[in-house]
Image (cartoon, rainbow, N blue to C red; front, side, top):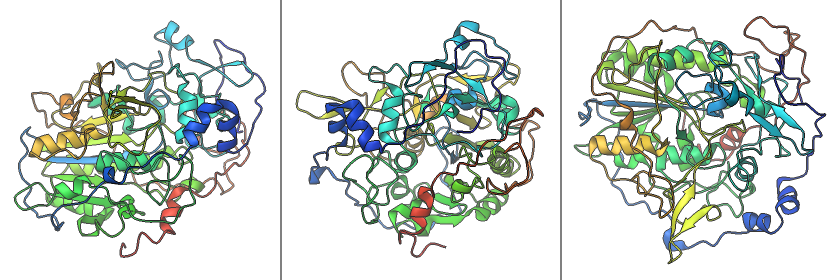
Length: 524
């Protein structure tokens, strides 16, 4: 693997030589987990009557007259970025449940910081370390799949398995400080951060993005077919999802409006052509924000497709942080400088943890459905699943006149949320029916944790529409990891001299699989 970009001084722990093992995930689980691995990989029982059924009216193009919201928020804009855990990306955040470090890397809680050590497969302990590299060139994409997440969590939720996963490297223990992101850091300091916000399921990108749109998933990994026969299956023919989504609740007569904006590949293409009428490309979002014609609900996706080359704009760990930061800066300023800001809420979250360390065990929460995840569950006496394991913590920043904070004493909300908390807010704000038990915020069952909260719990009673002087960054497109130039292998923050890592590109990303699946027919 690539050499860490900054590992001195190391206050504790001993580093050993890493042994990189590359068996297949299936072979590893069978060997390492024994009978439990067989259960994980066995074909789950499927009950046809429990499958999602679509029974909604026609979806129309959003009108230009949004319906007022009950909370004082008339416009919700959601931007979901990629693959970062809370401790890895925002463990420095003052007032948050983080790593014991301050924004500049100073240790503010020594006992907490010293506790972040992780055993490798030889029993050697490794501390977390600061990366100053602004991209992940030379590093390996860390494991963030269904089985890998469970190894990293540990059988008793010790949260100590990040180096026990044979598909991870020490990159999983890296963290960034405030200076790595010029805009997003200031957005968090001036508005509201959630430090108890979990991804919806302990697995990869697409299942969590399905939860963001539908409050459930019909697959356990990044496959172009729903209902795969095992957690890591990828070989099934592509077919569109049939799950009801928030877009089926929106754009009905007399109700709130909604529109999906995408930058390159539309995630909604995994439903086939169904949501083309309510979708548009990203430049239309900028035009709608400036004109004051945004719908009540807008989801805005960044550039995904070039994650494998490090040129995407979604904060995927290989990409340059300046690209994602510039994108978020443009989205925020389009809203804050537009005529709708006073009654707008911008939510920036991350789909899942990307394989990076976090110390807070994921809770058990209400299931999205009864048929897809049947391993880590709580059941009632009749066998009904009442609680399922959520995913690890991810960053979530809420920027709105109703979430204004004080950068000298940042506002952090510890309420427990996941991606469906956003759906719950949308539904409650406009009187819509929940999609599943998850966004209905039903308690997970006896002995489980408290139910997830509606994201509206993060709003303040008073509104302050004054916009702080946050950086407006010019659009940034990285030249990518394959282009020679910088001898350090990547740009650094802080002017440090970095060792040159080897070139280690992951295979083509799942976004290429979507592009080639045939599901995007009719999209442009």
